[in-house]
Amino acid sequence: MFKNIIKTTAFAATLFMMACGGNSTQEQEQVVNLYSHRHYEADQKLFEEFTKETGIKVNVVNASADELIQKLELEGENSPADVLFTVDAGRLHRAEVKGLLQPITSDVLNENIPANLRHPEGLWFGLTYRARVIAYSKERVDPADLSTYEDLANERWKGKVLVRSSENVYNQSLLASIIAADGAEAATAWAEGMVANMARAPKGGDRDQVKAVAGGEGDIAITNTYYVGIMLNDSNEEERKAAEAVGIFFPNQNDRGTHINISGVGVAKYAPNKENAIKLIEFLSQEKAQKVLAEENYEYPVNAKVSISETIAAWGDFKKDSINLAKLGELNSEAVVTFDKAGWK
Ligand SMILES: [Fe+2]
Image: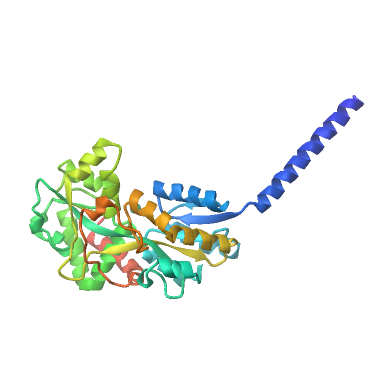
């Protein structure tokens, strides 16, 4: 009996020591906590590569940017978040206005990212950009009939337009750019015209709209460029076939240019691992990571030393709408209200 007690005590002591050992390792472990709206396989691969190079583990919390911003606000000074990663400049702007970000000075970032794609005081940095384009049926649409986003609201496209829900930030930013270019009244009329022209009630993501064009449900889809890039190179034949059935058209080439948005990051105001946060962002702006974003996620890299993937290069160069992307953030609420008024689900 006595012997047993000794044994048990020794065992407990061993466990206790193991636990202590475990704790001290955890304290030494380098981490960076990332709040991300992004949903792409290439990102995970990059984070693993970053950990391999630096020993810093990347903890990712995935949710929509609105949810993440709300989480940052609620957590306040106690937030574990180091970096906020969004798929639009509007949300970075919103986080900035709410005082949730802190300025970063980095020669690496200043060199790798053009000035127009980052905040002047270093509150946020674009890492890639993407264009919102028209994917048209090669069989049924003559691209000579395409011109602008505005024209998609023209009666002649009745029953032919496929586009996702207005809850999606990509559409909100697009409408914000139309409000900025054409004014509130014209933007409302545009949204109403689009609803009247829809081939079906909005459902699914951008890829689903492309598939619906391929399946003959409509003739024209609005999509971000990288989705078509991913589909064209998908191992699944069905995805490839759907993307091969559409042509890519860059709207508004004769006026303001095609709507683009960035995907970018900011360092959280109370980042507990600020140094690691900067290391991660610098890593993502370097040629190696930018190449992965360009080649595997078919985004346009911000780093000028990196070329775009062959797939999207085939669509040619295009004129980009040069509106300050922060403006789209300012107009976001107005865009949401306009969608509601127009009945765009
Ligand atoms: Fe996306």
